[in-house]
Length: 408
Image (tube, rainbow, N blue to C red; front, side, top):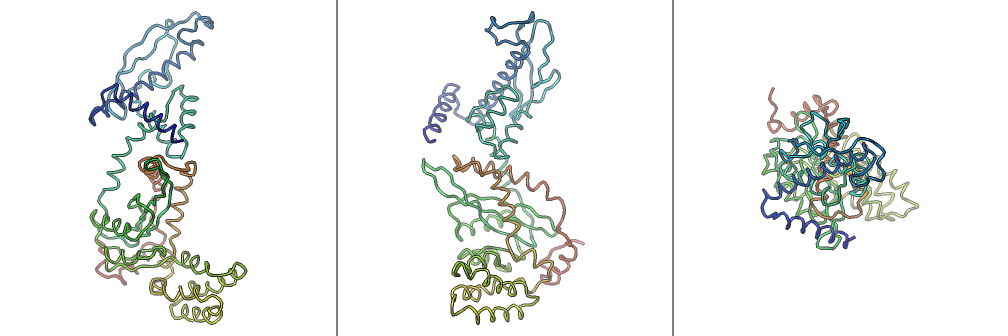
């Protein structure tokens, strides 16, 4: 695999050297040239199909029609205007389908490649699809060049201004393998999903870093502050050590709810397989309790029954109780939104659907491009506010007062 990548990169370097690519403007023009060349190849292939024989394969010619040169046409692509040559036939019967007679915008061809890329389609299958559908040969380097136009868009998205106050933010990370200096390493994609004061969800950003750590989360949270976020009312997090301290360093007044599902998983690690079902059943009255007092009674019962056998499993609930019990001060409508990080885990599952074809990404940029495209596809369905949001907002106003900066 590494050998193939070196070969492809070497070929690309040779092409760039041949065309004298040294500045960003040179890169822009180089990509435009590749796009025009790709379209030109496809148009010539269309005429081959129409006539039934390739340009110099006269022995298979079974028509009186023949090629009749080209006519020049200016079209608009994603990187600006470009000149292409439309092949003509002598009898005037050829009607190109890729670039139709009066069509002047060809950016949709690149859009097709980007769409396939966003669905997790491998480079090999993109090549096959473009060849079968359009007669276009699109190699690895061209797919990369077409999708690289996303990088400035991604940077702009990552740096866009955010709202001043978010009612809730869920923070989690999903892990991927990425090649770095010829070695496959694990990278964490840090994800933050925020719910604003209108009840609308949005992905605030995705950041790539080393294996998940509280230090990197502090960088993420500081970045949110730099983009305009001055307050988060409630944050939902997993059980990463130091995570809560990182949140309170960036946002001292934020209330933190530790994910109950993560807590269950962590505590049952200490439990024998034959007892897991019974132990888990005894946990349910804790996190399903109507009040904190009832939850503590259920925790006492758990302790009395299981401490002698699984002291560590029970102790972890006591040790993390301050963050596990945050939810009990809120009504059910808010509690169901904050007591687990399921919303972000569902989001991560959808990311994995389009990344599962890759055992390892060739670079951070390659991973970031597909995560961004998948995010745009997922979030375009997030058009409605959270159910019962007006009632939830009323409760938040009561609990947080002036921190809920709502304009009536």
